[in-house]
Length: 123
Length: 123
DNA sequence: ACCCTGTTTTGACGTCTGTCAAGGTAGAGA
DNA sequence: TCTCTACCTTGACAGACGTCAAAACAGGGT
Image (cartoon, rainbow over all chains, first blue to last red):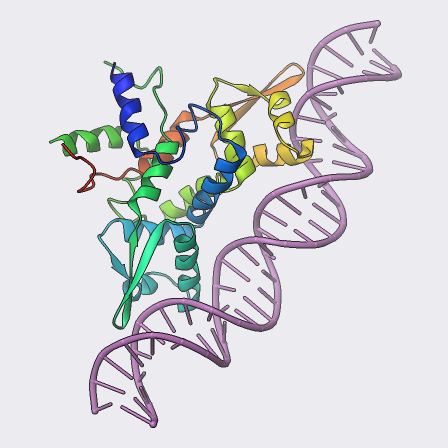
């Protein structure tokens, strides 16, 4: 019963496919989703993503100084995250602001759901 | 209230860190986690992972023919997944069997949780 | 119009990655 | 022991990636 409830909740959030652990991904679906994981597969981009995700929005001017990397390099990584569909950017005056795209974020999370494990609940 | 409950459930599953959307990842944590996302960032590996995750265990002999790729190439991708800690392998007689490591899987999923979105619930 | 600051693009560089062919290892069976 | 099959490792190669310096672009202020 709680099993069914969990699946309903998961599928609500999924625009693409059921969790990896439920049914194998078709080749075309994998081709769409893999670039998102790939974008998170670099330590710098993962930190950028977490910095952006932990607040409503974040200025590049606050992102760049958090790394020992040149401005262009940070800009490149942000572009990768943008092209993967994970974040959106908007210029407001002098500065550019980034924010996460919750749909994409949710989709990735839903893919990694483990439906029910036999040992998960000890009660 | 349901907010708190969700967080408790999430944190139970996390061996490493709170969700990306809760607190920025430290550099060291990012260096540990990024290789897992990177491993899923290739379409072939993502499909391999989903094929393995959707059953208790899977023989390489059933994995390889699902792709238009050479045996060594599949073997290489499986090695990447293994070294990322996402799967385990075991030789039993002639064949080698792969199964997912649920802890790693759960950890990644927990990182991608969105704690609560303002527009998620319509009731 | 000009400059100053913040951000992105371009070009170049060395390194890493995905792929295959060829060769190596492990176990089963005759 | 020999051979056959299943799987992995090695070596090689084209293409992709992360990085920076230099140049270009965008706005704000003078």
